[in-house]
Amino acid sequence: MSLQDSKPRKIDRKRPSRQIDDQEDNLQSMQQQQLPRQRQSQLEPYSRPIRKDRFPSSQTGDQQHYLEPTQQQRQRMQLPTLQISMQGDDDQQDNNLQPMQQWQQPTQRERGSSHAQPPYEARRWQHKNSGLSPKDLAVWFVGACCALMWTIVILGGVVVLIVYLVFRPKSPLLDIQSATLNAAYLDTGTLLNADITILANFSNPNRKVHVAFSYVQVDLYFMDTMIATQAVEPFAERPGESALKSLHVIASEVPLPRKAAEEWQRGTSEEGVALEVTGRFRTRSDLGKWLHFTYWLYGHCTIVIGAPPTGVLLSSRCRTKR
Image 1 (cartoon, rainbow, N blue to C red):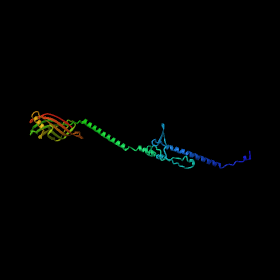
Image 2: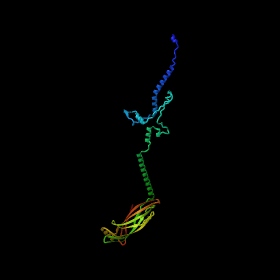
Image 3: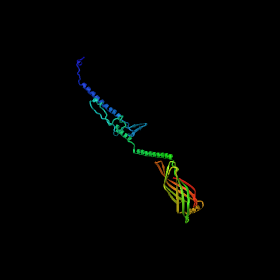
Image 4: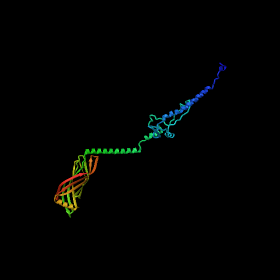
């Protein structure tokens, strides 16, 4: 063992500080390497799938590879930004890396609200939940009107059917009970003068319906030529009731066609004269106290009267219709 080896070694007092500096440098380099990874991991919860129709895609066989959005497209989508607060010592930087997001994750109460969603998703939600469009509103309005109209028609039909089954209304009838040709002659060959008495019967065949005649007009025809007319005063009938009305008809110098004049001459001398009695009536039927309806009736009778002065009713045939 030499004397040089036996000399005591000098202690390097600066060595510990150099080791500390090296450790700090290594720590800073590791932090710089880990920082991009942490940022990427913090962005993962806020990432969302890229829509197929927003960005172009390239197809390879059965697989589709969607291209990443550009920076301008990311700005349009308004992706959340990160704000990193660097506070405290270098050893605490990892704990202070907190993302400051523009929107928050929706809670259970706020789920379904547009304020708890990102702007792009909020616009989609508002578009889907903005209510009916004007076209849809018009369709719904037309459908509601049609449904209301059909409801009214069905209810009206049901009411009419019930009323018909309960009351079974029938039209009043016109009948000729008797007719007398008191006098008749032709002046200058074609001018007719006649005196006729007709007893008309207006009957109400209903059992529960009251009938009222507000307007009654009776006309007398011979071979399509009106020779006289007569009006009857208004009257009313109870259910099952009949009313006899006497009509005194006078024809004064009524011009007849030559063929009609010859037929009148032949009828009054041999087998009788055929006349037509027509009537027009404005009738009101009362179904109880609150339900009334008014309608027109038309009566038509064909009668044959014998020769004057004792010409009586030989035959009669009548019908009444609306």
